[in-house]
Length: 344
Image 1 (spheres, rainbow, N blue to C red):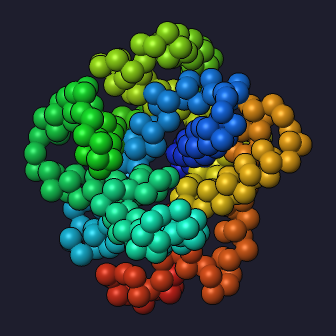
Image 2 (image 1 turned 120 degrees about the vertical axis):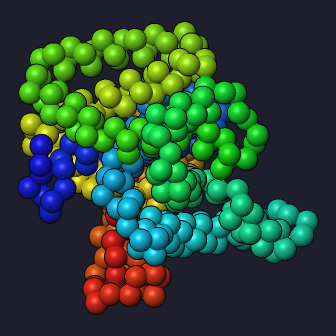
């Protein structure tokens, strides 16, 4: 299962690549449908992926935490908190900066409202960036709790996911709904890697299991039972296992290698996909070149992913590479190392 690609593990990158596409697909599809005032066939794919899209992302985010959790606080905070804070502050500034003229024109307070809008983003996560806003919180909480029996943490985290917590504050609500998956990824990492190896060794059984899961997930989602207490937790864990299984099987075919590249650069895509998404949505809906809403959503998804990568390729060897690489001045660790640290 060890990847020959710069020490990475292939199935993990495949899983992350799959999940980042699902995330872009969700934002693209819902944005297109909201602008058009009607739903398309992509809406069903987004609904199908809802139970496992973010649970799997958080589970994978916790997989390698055991390697660094016992390091000193300075090193830990640099890699697991400051790293994400840098990119959140940078990209929330970029996104709000692009929206600022419109916000100022529509608000009675003009540019005062823009300032208020910007400052609020540090209390209430801004738009698509809530994932990297929440990750540092998960990392800090997990390190603080590392002496607590893991089973106790899992039970409390599962109870939080099951409980109908809806405060309207993203940090609280998403922490309650997602932490169980992140901690499970951290605590059960050896078992998850072992499970991936088992699926790879038994491809026929793995494929049959995926088919059964897809049917079960689809039935529960489209009959309205997927969001029920206990059911959402079960579907989240089953879906995460299904993504791990599919990712392990994908490692056997080079046809899927582009997905591995997307996974290896998932944070790059997550940070910048809104650029291609927003531009392509406006063009496609205004021009009427394509009329089918589902097809428009698919094209906008592709534009979001490819647009982020194009920006990344254009700036990576220029002074603008700070968009995706953390400069030395933004580090707590002061070592003799390359001046920039990749976003992931």
